[in-house]
Image (tube, rainbow, N blue to C red; front, side):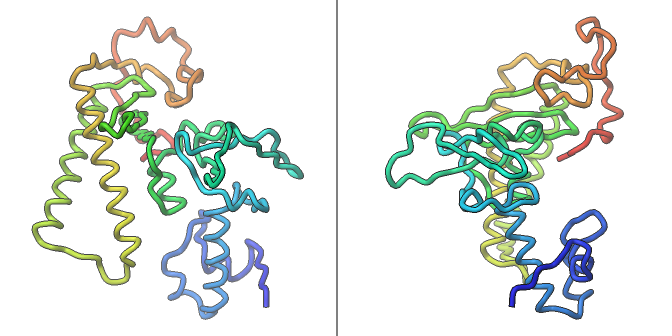
Length: 268
């Protein structure tokens, strides 16, 4: 039988924590294992296939596509109507794709939701181009595959600072040390983790490594700037970087010392 559960049901309370996040210890907390499993499946399906809190017929079948693979756009979206059309000619047999972060109606999500967030919410590592928005060191960049698969290149979407370079260098070294440890000690997939999940986690790990390597290589030939630290907390949103900053940022002689980094929302 079909079971429809409201967000305030006992099962929802058993599955979700107070912030609306999945409770990994749900089986230990609930005596209604079968119904909980059904609820979790429904919740995962809505998270992975829905648009916010809604499932739109046919639209919910479209997968995420990056770069040229993204071939649709939204014309109208309200409570009753969702009109989606092709953004270019789509070849016979080609997959029709949506995009989960740089769609034409994604608004602020475009500037705060990158490849790691797609991995976190949807469980896969997107193809290139890949976008990284890291709030504490104020890094916003896009990694792209060069034509004819001749390597990778980076575009910095916000000014890159020395602090950003230091952050990437430090984390690259930690990621590489982790890889070396697992290779040398021949550590395999832990108990309780599926092989598919384990491989996907390493795919995300490798995406970070490639992104930081590519960015650091480009940064070595760039003139770094502290401009990003003169911006407000919306430094990552084009046209709103200086929102809330009363003084003229061009008159600043020194960058923000960064003591308030942890106050930024969406820290990665």
